[in-house]
Length: 170
Image (cartoon, rainbow, N blue to C red; front, top):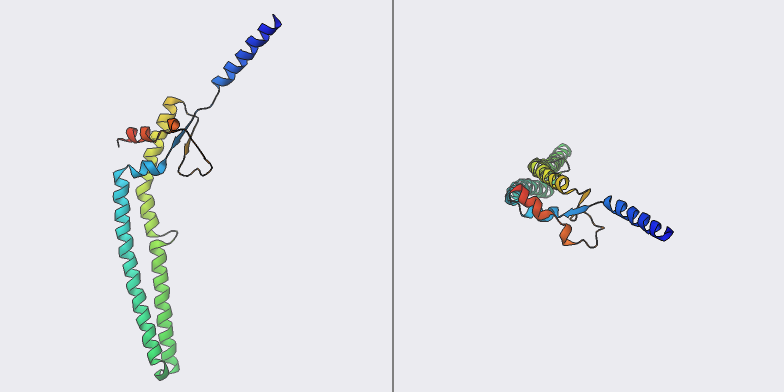
């Protein structure tokens, strides 16, 4: 009798604890973004703008190099004030190029701002789709396998990337 009561209690505890088991799912953000056509289009546009800006910087760099070569060629014939003036012009032009490069490509540059402005609405839509799926199915946690470097293996059955794409209409 005690054994049966003990077994019943044990099974009850196991049943209750298994009902509290957490459900996990994975998404692959890289896969999702590759399957959204507007992301590829935006990346192409950003690449074109980036090339234009780089060409502008390269042209100015070529100009500075020409100024420096002319300065070196004329060095012996230049007087003190003229040398200083030319050196200052070269340094000023180099500073302008560095400032321009930073304004385009720096950590707070225009390219990053444009990328963020484009990606934020898409990321918000993805987040809302993941949240909706998680709430309807009961997932406690959804992990991005593209950014989770510590995941060695995950069953494809818990990957909801295609469900997210379906919910977004892609």
